[in-house]
Each structure stands twice: as structure tokens, then as C-alpha cells.
Amino acid sequence: MSEFAIIHDFFAAKRLKRPDVSVGIGDDAAIVKPLPGHELAITADTLIAGVHFPTTTPPYDIGYKSLAVNLSDLAAMGAAPAWVTLALTLPHAESDWLRGFCEGFFALANKHQVELIGGDLTKGPLSITVQAMGYTKPQQAILRSSAKPDHLIYVTGTLGDAALALRYLQEKISLPESIQQKILFRLNRPEPRVKAGIELRSIASAAIDISDGLAADLGHILEQSNVGAILHVDQLPIAQALIQTLIPEDAIQLALTGGDDYELCFTVPEDKKFQLEQRLSAINCRFSCIGEITEKKV
Ligand code: ADP
Ligand code: MG
Image 1 (cartoon, rainbow, N blue to C red):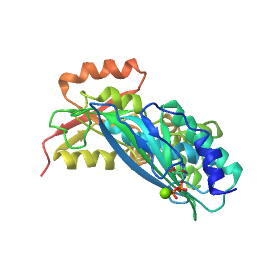
Image 2: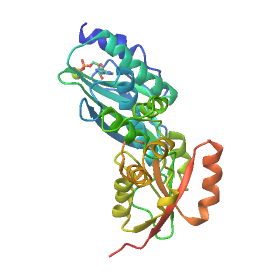
Image 3: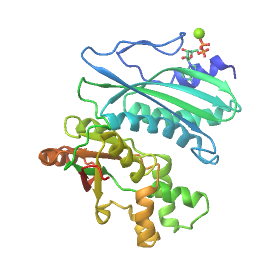
Image 4: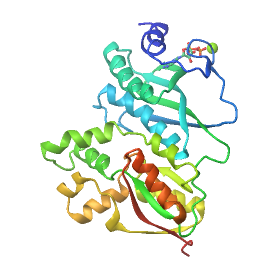
């Protein structure tokens, strides 16, 4: 298949079209016309086979996840995703692989009304770079740098499933069959917390998505906000699969340090606690208060 045919058949033909795109796939560059009064959040992430996902990962999951990790970064800013570009490096152009990849990619893109507006296609070891762009409003983006002492620390969802799945795939642990599929799904199909991120605008003082583990990612908020924190380990929303399969100390350890969950960790001033609880409950997003911000420890 020619490069042109691949771009046309697999990418251009499959994308949904947004009214704020003047020129999409097909020219030297895309042209977008952002809505007046908004700002744009822009992010990119690369996934490399064998480094960011096991080489045995199904193409659907690779397509899904390469977009999901980027939408998760936008969610952590409180941004609403709009456009993406895709730079794909493939060892061979196999139709079956491309079909699976596109199904996963576009399932998530369509769910969030994201338009693929361009990209690149090259030959080489499998690697996927997605750049995502989304809307925020002036003063509304949620930064890592604005957490203050006494703000409460929260996390969405549950922690540790993805890390448990990775250990299982690396044959470091064995797992009962009943939970294998469920945790592999959490590793390969993380649900970016886009709606929650938007609800957190004007409520959260700081936010980050958990890609490297709660301890490391909360650490980035603390460092950039120049504050400390007290974590209540007994309040961590440890995933059920960890509680079922690991001794308590290991379950806590994995929930604190395991990556790839793509939940949001965020801080909220005490006086916005009620509003937060109402907003996240209204969208059925699970959340847990896990600690407080303190003055920086010396
Ligand atoms: P150029 O050589 O001018 O960079 P290309 O031939 O690489 O252009 O790409 C042609 C068009 O197809 C461009 O609009 C580009 O953005 C788009 N495109 C290329 N690869 C992809 C891809 N993987 N997904 C979506 N669009 C792509
Ligand atoms: Mg060109």
C-alpha cells in the first residue's frame, strides 16, 4: 500500500469533522480556527514498542492508548480536547494491524469529539507520537504549581491495577483467571478523566494525571507548588485486584508507586470541598480524599 493510500483509507476516511477545523488532513499543514475567548492547551506523548507497551499488545489497544495518554494530559489541565496529530512509525504497513490500530484510536477520538487533523507516516521500529490540543479559558487551566497548605488532596478512581497487570505480563506474579482480563483492560484501555478535568476547573488548585505513580506524580505538584503533604495511606483507593492478590504492604506499595493508571490527583481548598463532591458525583466519577497539603518540610 502506498503512503497516500494508507493515509487516505485508514486515517482521513475515518476521522470525524469539527466545525473549528478549516483545513484537515491532506495539505502541508492543518488550519484550525479556535473559538474566540479561549486558550489552547497543547501536549505530545510518544509510545515506543517494548518500552511503553509490551510488543505483544494488540493493535487496537496501542491505538486507543496512544490517544488516551494524551487526552489524560489535557484532562489534568482541565482542557476540553479538540484536535490531534499522529506521527506513526511502522516497520511494515500491514492492513490488519492498521485496521486494529485505527479502530482503537478512533473509538476514543469519536467518543471525545476529537478530530485527527494531520500527522506523519514513516518506516522504522514501531513508535507512535500523538499531539493533542484542547480548549481552556484564560485563568482556568489547572496548573501543578498552585497547591497551598491546608488544601485537601484527592485522587479519582482506584490505584494499582495497571501496575499489577504489567507485573502479570512480565510474569513476575500469577493471577486468578477471574481478574486477568479486568486488570489488562485497565492497563491497555485507560479511561482519560476528561469530564472530571473539566468539572475541576475553578475548583481544583492543582492537578496532575498519574502516569508514573501517585507518589512520583504528587511529588511534582509538591515541588512545583513549593509545599509538603501528609498522605493518609489507609484512605488510598487501592484497586480490589491488589487487595485480593497481594499482602497489604505490597498492595499499598504498588498503589503508591505503580504507573499507568491515568487517574487524576488534585488539590482542593477546604471551602470548595462540597462543590467538588457534588460535581464529581453528578458525573459518576469516583474520588477519594487521601491527604492534605502542608508547609514545605525542611
Ligand atoms: P508532507 O510530505 O507535506 O509532510 P505527507 O505526505 O507526510 O505531507 O502527509 C500528507 C498529508 O497527510 C498531510 O496533511 C499530513 O498531515 C497527513 N498525514 C500524514 N500521516 C498521517 C497520519 N498518520 N495520520 C493523519 N494524517 C496524516
Ligand atoms: Mg509538505
